[in-house]
Image (cartoon, rainbow, N blue to C red; front, side):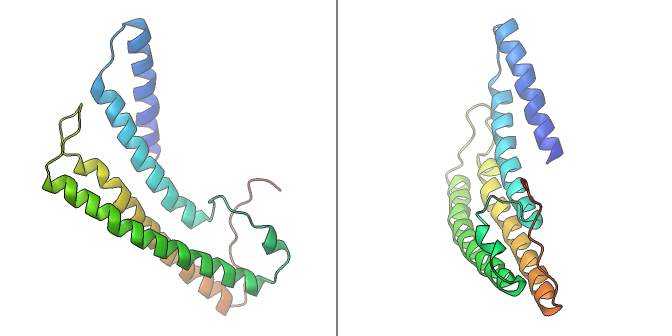
Amino acid sequence: MFALYSHIVAIVFVEVIRRFVFSYSSIWAEETARYAFIYLVWLGASAAIKDRSHIRIDIIFKFISDRSKAYLYIIGEVATFIFAAVAFYYSAEGVISTIKFESVTSGLRISQAWFTFAVPFGLFLLMIRIIQRIYLDIQDLKNGRPVFSGHKMFS
């Protein structure tokens, strides 16, 4: 993720200078930054599942037991997994269509499939992380430990 983020920052910085100082910009740079951002978002979503750092409203967790909290987390993870599986199916269809019709990017002139693949790839990683999180939650539940509720942004 750091490499993708560094690429985006470097490309945008160079392109701003090229555009406003030299009155010239390239198509490929903007395009690679855009696609790097898409991959970064999906990798970040997967990492957020692991750390349980997605935005959520968790006021109810202050009023329920640790056991109930574990069950609610597991129900939420199962629902997220189902959503991710459905989205994975439809996004994979998009990649297959891109390959079938040999779509290419406008600037780089390479197969668009490399970039549309970011969505099913990210969803696949997300589903793996959800399975890991469910496993850890069940382990915590079995051992009587409170489930990991993530790191708090605000106290």
